[in-house]
Length: 237
Length: 292
Image 1 (tube, rainbow over the protein chains, first blue to last red):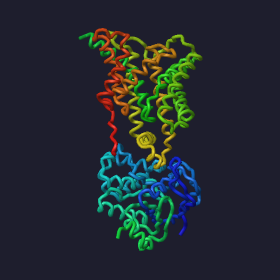
Image 2: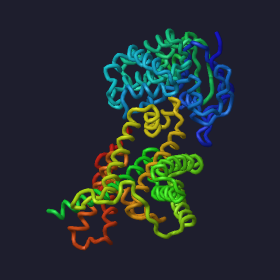
Image 3: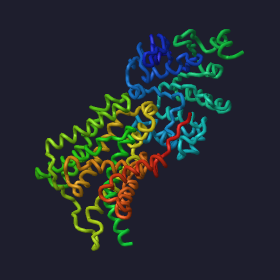
Image 4: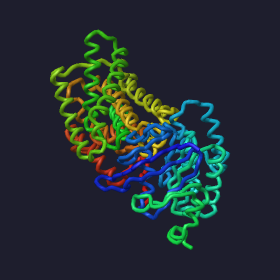
């Protein structure tokens, strides 16, 4: 098991406001890691810090290359796909164009076309709507499109910001089943931010618990799940 | 009736000028979300470059292409040097810089080439196109070039990867960065293209209004009017809007008493106000809806 991403002493700032206070964590290659925590704990900010979307200090090493302080587009080009909060859909463009945009960093035409078909195979509902404007899709379909767009990058690591947000339970189930397949078969490592802790801990093999911008607990997902205080605070039973 | 047709045709002829300028206005608006007040002066400066090249003996079409290329590079450089550092500055700073550019370019042209009026050749000739003499060959050529530009832009934005990337960068910069698009360069490319289109507009307009540093003052206003009427988000709409402004202006000047040459310009302003009041997105523009 090798380390894909190493984070040391990560701090993040919105203007003068410090949101992360020295996070340390590691992502294992091929693993699924989840960040848990209440609203405002800094989960989204952590993901944004990893792709250079907020001002940060600290060390970030991806495949032993420092990505701290790099521009978002350069970090993405290294193979980190970020599915942002709110899905980041290009809503006035078609489903097909959204997928084309996902492969903007690649120039291998034939492979891009093949990857599109693969995305459509994972998400048949997108295939039916290729020429439809992305903004007209349902929430679940837009989330599928966002994941499909991220896949088009052929990422080594995918950052997912609350993929279950606002979706019906059945759609969420379907989505997480596909995420599991992507992790196993496409060998994409996942870093998952979720409010729905039960769901996230089922998928993840490692978890970090954030509180006000600090890691307060970490360990194998199964262990975290059994933890008394986590259960009471985040799993609700 | 004959007067009406005559005035509509004459309106379309001047409308071609406005359409060309409106297209350049929309290009930059798409890229940066602001109206560039210096757009007209940039076009004027490009036209002077073409004039200078021809003075040095460069044949028309070579000078034309060379000017378009120089303007493209100039627009790109302007964005990289002046506007890239201002990316996070408030709108007001941008407006101040636009006005500064306007004055600087205008005075620079006057300083280099002085303020005397110069003739500028037309590649299409100035003979009347038909016996009646309603439309000159140059007017028709100008309309043709405008429509050709529009078609080329459409093909570029719909069917090329870089066009798609530019649209994505304009529509949603954050998501565009997340798929690896270099948004800053896309904006610069938009500036380059707008400058190049402006150069074409300037070179086509100059044979009609003559070349001098202030040639674009009123035309830019009409171009804005055309773009607003057609919708600032729609290149096709801007062209239609430009033609419409030309026709409306001409008809009003002829048929409404007291609107002579002096009051024509206020019609453009009235149009802008009217459209913004009644249908802010213009005839063909997209309504921007935001989920809250």
